[in-house]
Image 1 (cartoon, rainbow, N blue to C red):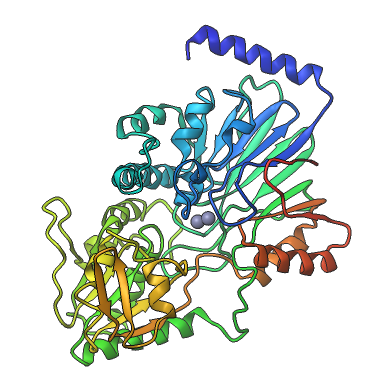
Image 2 (image 1 turned 180 degrees about the vertical axis):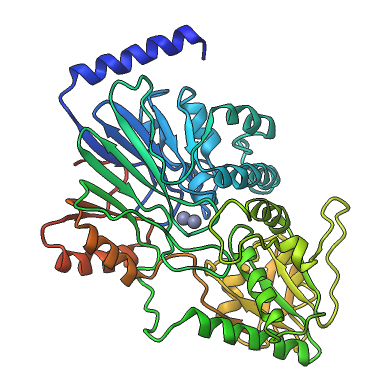
Length: 477
Ligand SMILES: [Zn+2]
Ligand SMILES: [Zn+2]
């Protein structure tokens, strides 16, 4: 945009601020109330802020994109990204195309991981173009990601910054570490005496590598927008992460002792680095043999390089620990496209976590699943329709369809462990009850999850208006 255009649009915003009666609304741009592809529009008395710009992980084509057209072209004053998972950043180039004047605010690690994720997403969409007959794929291109980044504005945690185009309306935003993945943020927005807090995806307790959330003490905010991912998840009260880690170490060591190998399908951002740090701890504690080779591959390698590059500048359980340098990992060579070779006695941490078609974990599984000495260890959620979901629901001896042309008999050991990157539902309830918001919006949850929160919180917060925001509807606050 030219300087003169920018000036005139600033004037329009200023005039709008002056003329309108104060109006504050929230609007969900998601297709449905579910985990989906997240994006929300806030109208803050004339300032329009977009929260997140996700891609729906289970939909293709136009159904994967939030309804950005609900708000007029180039009317957003700011786009704020909470973290670099696909369901929060995957259509950022589309949102920027619709709102070319809007700066994008995000943390430095979120920008680094997001850049890598968006480029990977171009490659995934390019291969889907022919397979699924999606003529408008890829939705954006490598070069476009590069020049759109001119409008990315890096902001640190816990330092308020203004998102007003002119500074005239006084809209302040502060990022707080959400402890979900590297660079994830909860977002506090303050304007005209109103306070809005968006949790993004949050994990309150420390992980093995990164520390848990450090959120502000809220006191009766006007609006709390809260994730509800695990609302339907009744984890037993005696769950401890330490117990899960001990069981996980034992499962790996028994596979190695029995002459087999271990495959751990992992999400490239977050879960890979957490699992690798656990394995390093297990080796230090003598729970696993020091010499057992650990291999990573797929997008995980790139993301681990980025995690390591922030080892000194972000909150860590083991400051200065660098996974690739200190663990001497073996990585698959993607450039030469040599497949990762199977050998007994090794630990393979390969993405994707759901073993989706064409990903490294899916291709590797072709020669892995039929060997009864091997163990396949799941450490996170898998959609039931994905290969990982099919394997979780299968019994030993079942035939598993890994893709259109590969079927394998499932003979290896399969076990599941709980290392979720999302807060337990009880912890989120405590957080909301302490905050006592005037209005509470339940987002990022499938219907049974939001229903549980709605029921529980209506009892505990009778004064609070609790809403599962339907798509498009403008909710005043
Ligand atoms: Zn996330
Ligand atoms: Zn998410």
